[in-house]
Image: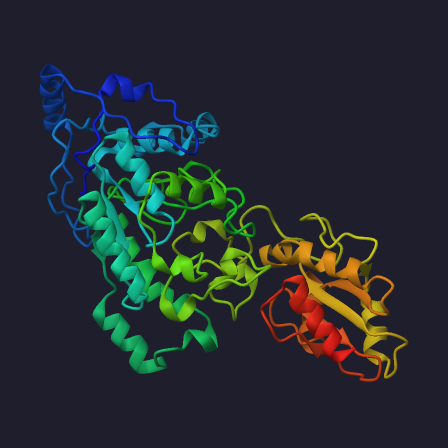
Amino acid sequence: MASATASISSHPAALRDVKAARIGAMRQQVAVAPAAAAARGQRARAVRPLRAAEQGRQPVSASAASAAPAAPVADEVVAPAAVDYEALARELEGASPLEVMDRALAMFGSEIAIAFSGAEDVALIEYAKLTGRPFRVFSLDTGRLNPETYQFFDKVEKHYGIRIEYMFPDAGEVQELVRTKGLFSFYEDGHQECCRVRKVRPLRRALRGLRAWITGQRKDQSPGTRASIPVVQVDPSFEGLDGGAGSLIKWNPVANVDGKDIWTFLRTMDVPVNSLHAQGFVSIGCEPCTRPVLPGQHEREGRWWWEDAKAKECGLHKGNIDKDGQAAAPKPANGNGAAGAPDIFESPAVVSLTRAGIENLLRLEKRAEPWLVVLYAPWCPFCQAMEASYVELADKLAGAGVKVAKFRADGEQKPFAQAELQLQSFPTVLLFPTRTARPIKYPSEKRDVDSLLAFVNSLR
């Protein structure tokens, strides 16, 4: 129910013709004639208000917010089933985030809302403001966010003159979970149960009061699960106001934007950001499950770091993962060396070990020279993030008396790697010393060249 701030207004006809660059769209101040304002008032009365949800469904809380007097309002609200969204996604594939945002707000009016997590997705709110259209923002308060995130929420509300519609978990469900399993059960049996109680169910309640929602998903955030998200789609997981499959539309305006370009946009537009970003946090969630990323790490590696890479979704975007727990598209390979994602760590300085080769390394009690081996899966975004530093390390160690190798440990090789090679998650780095039979596991999450080299030199 939040509205665009009064500082930006645009004539409707001019707004429909806006062709903003993907990044760096600048504010426009356009005087609005009284007659145009009156016409917009008539359109505003014609837009259907958010009606009460059906019995058993809870809409996102409705709180009136003052819209900019001259701001254009939504065009006629479109029923989700009346549009070919696959065709629309193809049409908008090359559109700027501002164009996508404008189309979304125009189509759904007060029946669409921006999902705001308290991170760099604040860019969505800035884009919505730049359209000059009224917009709504909601957020999930799990009860376990960082203090900095709560402070950021307050700053965003004041900066944009809006009220964020907060959704909270069911107190009885939280109480039952904590009394039964403790405050930190997710470290032992995975984050899904806690996320289901604190995030997914509150989100489900919020979305049942909407026909569409807007997310900050980007393809480069998690190559394992988000590489194929379109800018608009029928939501594969949640239901909207009318209920049933296909009743909710999901918009991803920044799907095709790189993270670095998002930050260029935020700096250019002087948008407030979460102070945690300055402390090394990139992807920000609940306090117990979020940490800063280190050199050579992918941004999603700051989330649920004790779990396997393929599980790096909390359930809000579970449509990105298929029923087997793998990325919905593209599929990871099923076996060692099988077709699938392109192989990584490709370098003349990196030896590719077969199962027999690494078994021989394990059997040797004395080796002519030490071996450094990375256990990896080519589809894993965290393996991909360290590829450059590992190849550079191999080049540095070439001719220095240390062999650098890789062993693909996903698919049918994973049980063996877990039982014999200390594999818990990808990537795992092992050093096979010259005079010790058992390999030594690299204990740090730092995967830059200097850190890996220090590990090798301390044990060679």
